[in-house]
Amino acid sequence: EIVMTQTPLSLSVAPGQPASISCKSTESLLHDDGETYLFWYLQKPGQSPQLLIYEVSKRFSGVPDRFSGSGSETDFTLMISRVEAEDVGVYYCLQGIQLYSFGQGTKLEI
Amino acid sequence: QVQVVESGGDLVEPGGSLRLSCAASGFIFSDYYISWVRQTPGGGLEWVAYISPNGDAMEVADSVQGRVAISRDNAKNLVYLYMSSLRGEDTAVYYCTRAVKMDSWGQGTLVTVSS
Image 1: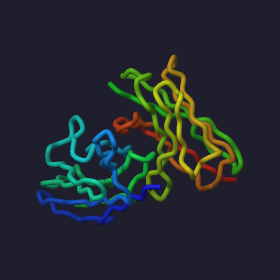
Image 2: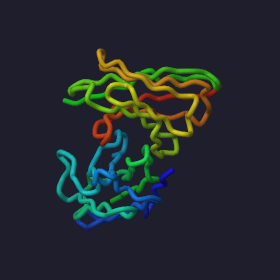
Image 3: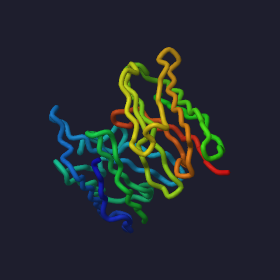
Image 4: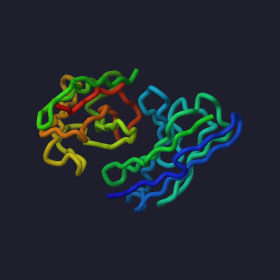
């Protein structure tokens, strides 16, 4: 079973400042098809999770360009260039190469 | 627009059974994998099961192996999650999502296992 570990587990950021969340997997997420199956989600308070980033760095439709993803193999990062009030919530990474498993979540506060 | 709606959650006694449903619309249902994901009261997300577009392949998480089955009816745009021998730790909000990217989530349906 692939285990996903996120750091930090909580984060307090002033509006307009950058934020970064790390996600590490116990095995490489690089598939034989050349894609890397690492996803990022945001769950805003009282809402269902929403997809932000897929395949490490591809922004999902409608996601602001202040969100970006990077990384490879087992080490990944979600970056928010300038945090806004609407970015508050819990961020999760997800691996999809061997069934699925989520990270523990990172709570972002303003 | 793409939409998935879960239903069927309930209060059930330990050892009981339940069937959850997921109704999809706004996309070609038979082209997509569908997954169920649950969120426990502690807040963490856990993948539960998925089913392939034509229903010939499915996987379930080790934590529910032998107690959960998944099926789909492409004529009705429905996916089902059958849960049996329910335990307290199965208490959660259950979400249906359009896989592989899990790009569309419903509002979830609450399953509470308690006597």
